[in-house]
Every structure is written in structure tokens, then in C-alpha cells.
Image (tube, rainbow, N blue to C red; front, top):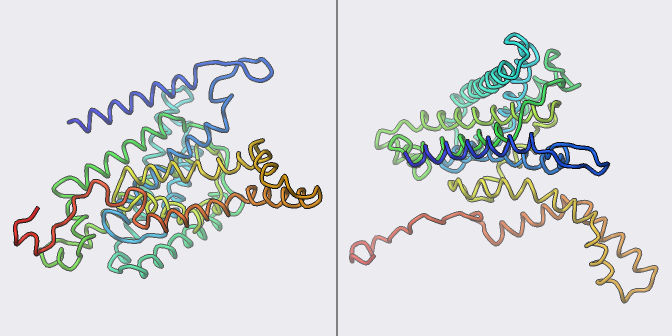
Length: 365
């Protein structure tokens, strides 16, 4: 009951924040009246990107973290949801009418359709492949990701290599973070339920779980389907926010980004995974802003003030070039974090330590 009340409270807060962003007007640089979203469009883009990545990471955490499998094809399910939802709104979005209620209803139906399409794709790839383990499963899911991308690239109704555009921007703060809250609520409550303990049993020892009569394949397929459903929802939100999607936006690197969020946050720790999704979404943009700021100029001037003018200019340009190639620093920071916290930022926190057999026999706590 407490979890449901918390979810309801979060949804209400998200609705209030979304309404405030859309209706509160401020002055722009030219003195005109604009909404908060219009004035701070860049930060709003990052904010919704954070929410979409939380949905993706929370879903994948059920597979990689709680069930102990290793999927590298999550972006493929996101692509299925994005294209399915976009096709539905573009083809049938006018059938219910053009008023706000009808368009919102159409958008929600399209999101559900994209999620269901992704879940079906998860079932199709999950049933034959989840009898595999470890690296073999990762290779199969990676192959599925490339198959999905290849199919879309050759599907004329979906825009093929041109990409697909023209969607109305339905996605806002409420829908993004509302679905993020629902995804977290669903995953956490599922794994903490009596039925959901089967996921943890599969992760801890699959052979022992099978010996106890647990259908491990069923649990792995179920985890795959649920994760794919939320990836499809995230894809639909992404498509109706960016208003243009291209197959290259759902490639192997996108899947790796989501996997890194799960690993960095601590596999099997929902709070840590959400924090990592926020951190890894914001970090590249922070490095971009730092590279263009006056602070970097001051740091460079302080660091190289003893050099001759010619060498100072050279050193300054190289330093700024390093920060402008922010993905290098982004990768270095990830390496440092993995070396210092290989179990993830929140890995192991909140999990009681197991007592050794000797201490248990002696009755030592």
C-alpha cells in the first residue's frame, strides 16, 4: 500500500511540474513572453533524456541485474517501440479527433502499442536464445539488435535509410517521468514479491534453482519480455519528443550505453541504476559546457602562465581540444569509476553480508 501511495504521489507531482513548465511564462532575451520549456529548451531536452534513460536502465536491470543474464540488444527493443508508436500516431492519430483529449488518448494507445510490439519481439528472441548463457546470449542479443536495425533500414513504410519524421511532440515531463516511476515501481515490486524471488534464484544459482523445480527458462523469458516492454515505451517517448528517428540512433553503441548504466549503478540495485542513468546522461553535456566556458580559459591560463607566448598558445589549444573531445574524458571517467568501484557505485549496499559456514556453526552473528 505504501508503494502505491508513493507512486501516486510521484505521478501527481510530475503532473504539477509538467503543468507549471507549460503554463508559467517568463521573458526571453528579446523581451518576449515564453514558457519555461521554450526558454530552457536545452536543459529540458537533457531532463527528458534522463527520464527516458531511467526507463531503459530500470528495465534492463531486471534482465542483467536481477536475473543474471547479459543482453546487448536493448536498443533493438527501443527501436521496435519507437517505430511502432510513431507509425501508429502517423497513420491513425487523426481517427479519434484533433482535440487535446483525443490526441492524448491516441498517444497513450500508441505508446502501449509500441511497448507490446517490443514485448512480442522480446518473446520471439527470448524463447530460443535464453536457453543460452553468458557470452553466447550476449552475441545472440547483439545479432538481434543488428537484425532489427537492418529490417528498419529496408522498410519503406518506416522511412528506410531516410529516417521517419513528422510526429507531433506529445512527450512531456509528466509522461516521461511518470512512466519512469511506473517502470521502477513494477520492477522493484516484482522482484520483492514471492513470485519474483524466482528471478533472484536464477541469478544466484541456475542449476540449484532448476533442481528445486523452478522453470528458469520461463523466468528468463519473462524478464526479457518485461524489459523489452519498457524499452518499447521509452522508444515511443523518445520518438515523440525528438520528432525524428533514424535506425542509426538505435545501434550497438546505444545498447552499450544502457548496459554501462546498469553496471555502473550496481547490477540488481534499482536506486543505483537510476542514479547512474542520471549521471551518464548529464556528464557528457557537463563536459561540453565546461569546454566552452570561461572557467577552462582561466584554468589553462593559470596552468601555463610560465610558458612563452608561442608554447602557451599551443598548450592552450591542445587542452581545449581535449575537452572538446569530451567522449575521451567521459570514457576515462568510466574507467576510473570501474577501477575504484568494480561492483558499481551502489553495488552491495543494503545487502546483508552472508555469514560463513564456520561462524554459523559457532552461532557467531
